[in-house]
Amino acid sequence: MKLMTKELEERFRQIGSQENKDPIVIAKFFNPAGAGTWLATEYDPKDKIFFGYVSIFGDYCDEWGYFSLEELESVKGPFGLGIERDLYFKETPASVLIKKYTKV
Image 1 (tube, rainbow, N blue to C red):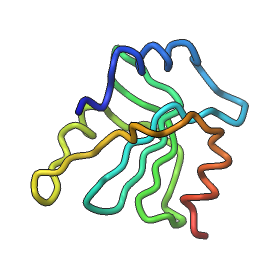
Image 2 (spheres, rainbow, N blue to C red):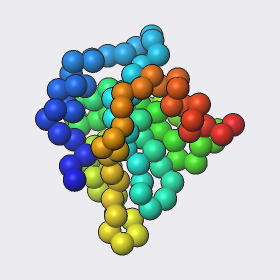
Image 3 (cartoon, rainbow, N blue to C red):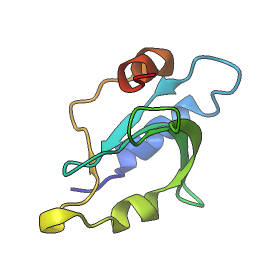
Image 4 (cartoon, rainbow, N blue to C red):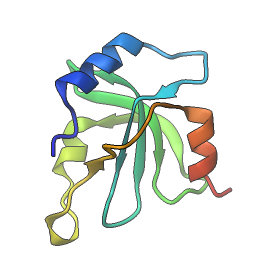
């Protein structure tokens, strides 16, 4: 499964920058074999870089920042499993999701 599709890229383009507001999470990526959730709110197709919220263990280390599509695609976990995109994810305000993933 591709992590990025033309339709998803177009949706990121439509939404654009979400500075200074409660951003809408457009895509959710996750590690099916362990810890890690990436909630993407923006995407730069030229550099293949997302901006969003990264939750590895749901603790004080979770943070907003940039993450690379190429890095997500390069992850190979147990049994060759890689990072996946949640195909059933519905766009949601970040404030709602961060409460769900953060345990502290």
